[in-house]
Length: 413
Image (cartoon, rainbow, N blue to C red):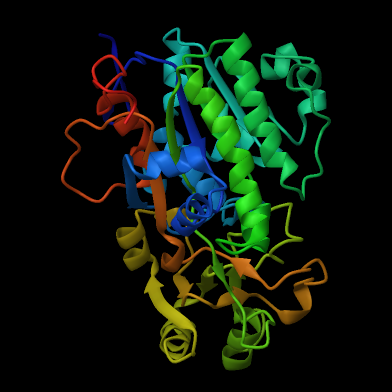
């Protein structure tokens, strides 16, 4: 059997069509609550079978984790350590959407270059170029589905294929489009390997077990059941969890880090970067539970020491400490890394955050408190390594440690 090596790990060739699903913001409780309510019978079946709790990458944001999943490696290897960072060489704060920031090839690209039929569908277009880098095959986003061309995306006339209009970027339908497209691609294009990545719009608004959340997972459940019935191996994980980030009165529980540091050492002596920042901030106001701080050596010790005494801050780490603990690229991380407690977020200056788009109590992510994620499979698992799984082990498990249905007597679980 053909085996490919990517970023120091070996992967067996697909024996059945494989669909890897990254459910953005999927705290494990979303699955158990939806299953318990009766809204998600297929997910309930998966939870009774090969279901595991694992860890995501910290910072627990979208870009670092999606790229970890598709490279099978942490940010120290692939280089994507946030949605946003300060590019020291360019002396500019920039989005990390450009493939030029990627330092490792993806498993998707490797299989496509070896002759596999590979397809990628992502909700937001911000991930498309990174996920599709070096890949031959189909790669498009729900957000820009109407603009897909053969030359750019390996497919055209997507809206006709899927049978849905382009959804609003702030909607559950943006994720539903991903699943609907996955079913249609499986039926018509027969990919060997498909990667589906959703958006966490619902998770930012709705707690596990709520009507809105259960409705979302019921929708997802129907599409997953269809893919299962079509014979696909399904491997489901998440890029991060999600938690309420509010005070007792429901207002956002925010530490404005730049304002705080400016009062301690003066303005223009430190720069706070919020790696959660992306083009779609209406549902979280660019507030997450992780930040990096660039500050001169003369003031670094003072700032670090004072931050440790701020209520709501869980960790204050040096660049070296953070990169060792979270497997991050040192040249793309600030002098200090700040991680908040479970129900607290950090901002820069209060005046810079527009919270008018928050029409529900703030829910967000970024810290170690959002690190627990699910790994679910619709096949029996054979001889897993004796360690806590991470979300970027999903392709290793799916390709190297699952039994095909013919091997697993009695069905898929």
